[in-house]
Length: 557
Image 1: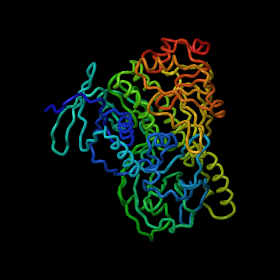
Image 2: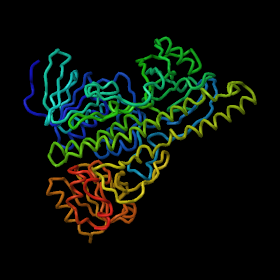
Image 3: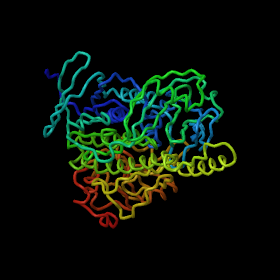
Image 4: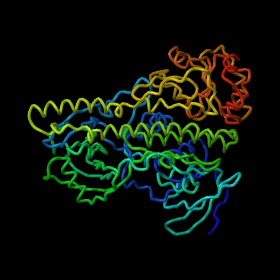
């Protein structure tokens, strides 16, 4: 094995899926050089995600790539309705939830952005372009991670060039495994996962079918859920809003291997006719899981995305949760590489992100159970013609529609996660608000996402966050010098922003609010604390909150 390293790299990221690309891109955007290692060639064999959540779009706004996402290739004028049917052609429609197209969907009042449809075969190239833009990211395709050795102040990573077969090592300060559910980095660390290993065995097929909407008598939709006498058995999703569809045959706890002929037969059953042409692009069996890693790593080797948590896609939480991991890690790795982060900083990654993963995978599993509920509760009359069947269909359809709304409306999941009990967040003594799913009330309580308020027709409060800590001051008469000088004395990047906006002042709830680079509130108060140096030491991870201060001290200072 030859040794080809010429210097110690700041960060090596394993896995160039959306999470690894986002982490590498965020690091590069922060001026931190990194190497991104990918075993494949970057091509997406089967897009496994298509919904870019609202928080992820807020990050895209920060990175300046919203236009790239919107123009990536999805037909933003295509119907976004969800419908549950027996078959498309000639079958029964039990219910439908109508949504505006992506183009016409309004932005919610809580955000300057909205969710987008951008399947992985479109989104990965966007994130690749973002990662490459900074000039700080070295993407190495066809390179396999073989293992690593962690030292006190570095990590030696063993890699293999799969094209040449050559093996070599690189030295880095930090290693991050974003290498998916079968993560070799996690395996090398000996980390187990807790939860339910198998929820269902499912088979996904990408199908090319021109003029799909003309094959049946139902209104166009983004997602169709197919319910037969055996219950919920498959779904069809509009992958590009044109001619590509993801057909998922939802199994149970028994593993079955389906051939292309099996998939074709099932697809014809869903459509309700045999006299049409289509092409199966790819078939991928997979397992829905409900698992969270018992640990997120060590002091120098960490995991994120599917390597840290595996969830049913019901709700669209998986990839978006992984992007949140990347943004949480990005600024913390920057701090450690640049020398202003303390020993508690990377410890806080697991403390902050693991509870969010547990919350989200449990919610996704609950959504799956709701989607599959007809397997236990289906009234056989719903498939019979006539008035009795009509009555049964309406009763079933109304109940199913009401039940499924929890999956359709999830702004609370995407924006309402908070870092309760984090060692680098200083609580202010206010009670924790309810953690909701379908609704979301903004709050600047420490640990929560800093609220969005429009300051002008185009500028959001969120537009200030990203590169550094931001001290938001809502009264220009307040003295902030102690906090600013304490931060600068430790080389912590910080900026003072004066906000003259009554709505923002009320929503942020204090005269001074310190916001972290990831956009979460670290501290707030109506005056700066006398122990400003301790506040800065806590939020940069030099000491944990519970070792240093109590909220009463900060509130009364």
